[in-house]
Image (cartoon, rainbow, N blue to C red; front, side):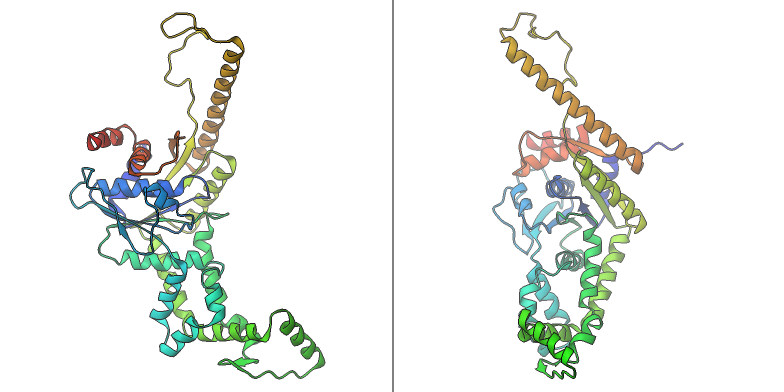
Amino acid sequence: MARRRPPADVLMEALLERRVLVVCGSGGVGKTTTAAALGLRAALRGRRVLVCTIDPSRRLATSLGLTQLSAKPRALDLRRYALAEGGAMSAMMLDTKSTFDALVERYAGDEAARDRILENRFYQHVSAALAGSHEYMAMEKLLELVADERFDLVVLDTPPTRHALDFLEAPDRLVSFLDTSILRFFLRPYFVAGRLTIKVATRTGAMAFRLVDRFLGLQFLQDLSEFFLAFEGMYDGFKERAARVFALLRDASSGFILVAGPTPQALEEALYFHRRLGEKEMPFVAQIVNRVHPDPAEGQPARRPGRAAGGRDEAVDADLAERLAEVFRDQQTLARVERKRVARLEVDTSVRPIVVPEFEQDVHDLRGLLDVGDALFGAAGAAQNARRRA
């Protein structure tokens, strides 16, 4: 029976050989910090890396020690670290609205069609808020970034969603929404190229339209009609590019990294997402469980309570000692419960996760990201970075 490779080795191989790594998980599990730490580790090993976040909370900038990121790649200064030859790292944050605008400008049939969409009031209000637009624009940006020869590896930090699978399924919902055939039956009889051509033949129809006018307004219907009519020639292109992205994500040059926390909900989400990745034939790389509490007694020599390491009696108030002992036991219980949960994840997925312990403080600079990398890749990575820090 072949021995399974250590998961850290599999993850490092992906960092050095893949073209796209997508970091997924529910909110609040350290996903963005993990993506940044992976990008930094790949850069230190000689790859030209871009980390792109879709998270609007600006967590990536904080992890990198920056005040903000823009919609264009920003090179990071890694000169103080012993970079392997060719190594470099850039970071950026997706701007959904500007990406949508650029897409319209690039693929509209002509200038008139482009202007009709960009100047449409319905488009201006919802282009950054349509359900699925954030995820679809991330996929559009991914196509653009993968074609950029400045980067060997693109690490995509997906948005914190209520359901991790939304990243894969939301673009389909957006494309379906933009399919004008759905609303053509309702809109086209009334509006053509922005001109009101309403013909109400029945009393019921007149009453229904007065209700629409009252609650939505005829101007809203006109803007909505113009929006869908303008997109009519672009729908096939949207659908075709979405298919290209899915083909890219299924390719062996891509890979998915799942990040979870030790809570039941986060682990259940990771389990479900792992299963769906298999159903969609997406290449899985690694499962990471962040913020796991270590056993406080692990690695410590056993000694009787109330005795100092040197053997002398400790002057500790009995009540305080009991409370400290209770906290100690609670931490042991928490660590034991979390280990069982993580072990259950391994049983259900047949994948050994990489466990990262809870840090004393949040990561807010490159040095902190190096520490996260050390935790991900073990003693070998820590020794390597100790030499780089020296």
